[in-house]
Length: 280
Image 1 (cartoon, rainbow, N blue to C red):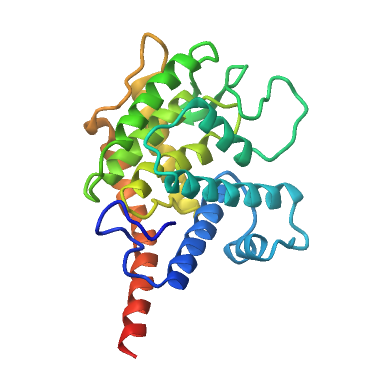
Image 2 (image 1 turned 120 degrees about the vertical axis):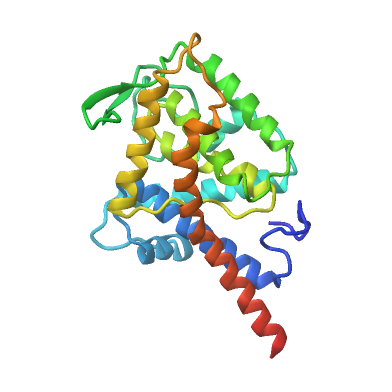
C-alpha cells in the first residue's frame, strides 16, 4: 500500500513502513486462512502463514490446499495492487484476472472455465427461513453477462464514493450477497465475493472485513445467505434486485459488523505498537 492515503483516517496512516508492511502481511494471512477455510481448506493459521511467508509445504496436507492458499495470497496482493493503481472502475477482464488467481485447481474441462463466466447451471442444497431443506438455484449462464453488468455498475458507483465506517458493513453485504446470488463462476464464488466486496472499503482507507472460519460462524454465515437467497429468489433478467434494500441486508450487515472487529483489532494493535515505539 502506498504512503499516500485516500482519507486522513486511512488505517495505515501514522505507521512506520515496517509496521505497515507487517500489518498488511498479517491481514493477507488471516484473510487467506479464513476465506479458504470457509470453503474447506484444512491448513490452520500457522500453516497458512508458513506457506505464504516461507513458500514451503506442510507435511501431510493436500497439494490442493497449498495451491488454494498460494492463489488466494496472490489474489489479495492483486487487490492491493488494484487500489494502488488509483482506479475507480473495474471491468469484466479485472474479475476474470482475479478469478484465475483464486481458482488454482487445474481441471481440463471446457465447462469449468478459468477467468470466464460459467457455462453450466449451478446451485446448492440449503435451508429456507423455516429450516426446510431446499435446492437453491443460482442465475443461469445465459443471464450472467447481463446480471454482472448490473453488478459491476453498482461496484463502480461505490468506488466513486468515500465510504464511512458506519456504512461499510452494508456496502460489503450488498456487493457480497448480490455476487453470490448470481454465482457467475463455476467455482470460487465465495472467495471472489469476499475479495471484491472489500475493495471499496480498502479504497476508502478502511481495513477489510474478514469472516472467520469457525464452525459456528460458518454455519451462521451460510444460513444468512441462504435465507436471503430464498427471499429474493433466483436472480434473472426479470428479477435482478441489484442493489438490495437495506432492510433485506440487515442480518448480513450486522453479521459483517461483528466480523469486522477482528481486522479492526489487528489495526489497533499495530497503532499501539507505533505509540510504544514513539514513547521509547
